[in-house]
Amino acid sequence: MQGWEDIRAEVLRRIRARIWPPGGLIPGEEALAQEFGVARATVNRALRDLAEAGVITRRKRAGTRVAELPVRRARLDIPVIRLDVLARGQAYSFDLLADRVQPAPVPVTARLGLPEASPLRYLETLHMADGRPYVLETRWLNPAILPDPAPDFARVSANEWLVTHVSLVSGDIAFTAEPASAREAEVLGIPEATALLVAERTTQGTGGPVTWVRLAHAPGHRVQMTF
Image (tube, rainbow, N blue to C red; front, side):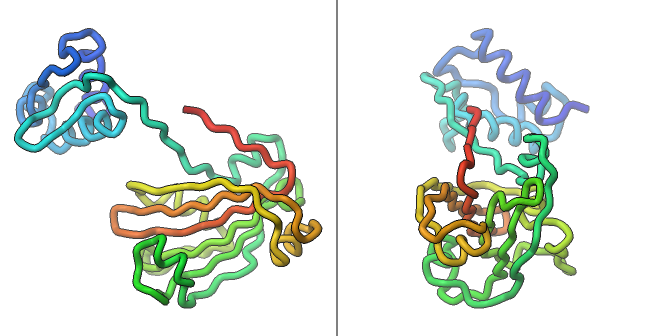
């Protein structure tokens, strides 16, 4: 049976071959599902992916059309820090420095769209490369997205568990250069106010808000993105 990736590939092939030209109307989900012998939900998943990529446009009662001017939309995959370290040829380890449930500060709940003082799980994790500080991860995690029993974040980092277990639908990320706070300086073993590359990210999942995280990278860190 064909999966949604196969349907996506065939639709994209027809668009590139100008079988369905720019601005042209393509068959509806029901017709495509019948043609390919799959469930309508499979076709919907394929078309949704193409719409998110800017290849097609979808409007209620107006149907689905090939985009007049296809737009490439950048996607940022959330990296697993462990794999990032291993890819550099270094040994990976991490220490869970804090793990508790407490009312989250207003800036965090506001970013996540949660009521003020919502109790969230606070996690502080130091990721290391060859035994040296690599990234200090400060995270507020929505307990509602966790299974029962919850994972042991002393055994698997929250970063890795979330990437591999939680489906995300949206998010935002900001990179800044900031002076190291007293806590960051202590944990990273650097002088206070040392310039650090900091990434702050919020993510939303299919079940609602997932997490707010701050990643303070040790001096000398380099970020590379592929579009």
